[in-house]
Image (tube, rainbow, N blue to C red; front, side):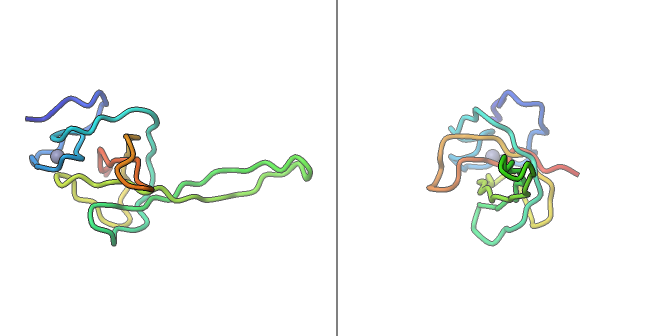
Length: 107
Ligand SMILES: [Zn+2]
C-alpha cells in the first residue's frame, strides 16, 4: 500500500519493504525540500547532492560562492544514478549525516 506523503510528486510504481521509505515505510517527511543534481551514488542507498549558497562578507561588501554537500537516502523503490536531477525532502535523521530522503527523480 502506498501512503500519501503530502507532496505533489510522482508515486513510484514499484512497491518496497524499506522502512525508511516515505511511500511504503514508516518514515514521515517534514521541513525543507531541496532539489539538486546527484554528485555521487557510490554508497549503498545514499546519494550526495551539491548545494550552492552565497556568503556575504560585510567588510568587503561582496558575496562569496560556497558549496555544501547534502546526503540523501534512496528508498528501494526509487532508482537514482549520478547526474540525475532529484527532489529530496527533509525527514528525521536516518544516519549521522543523512536527514533527507529522495522522493522524486525528475526528467
Ligand atoms: Zn518504497
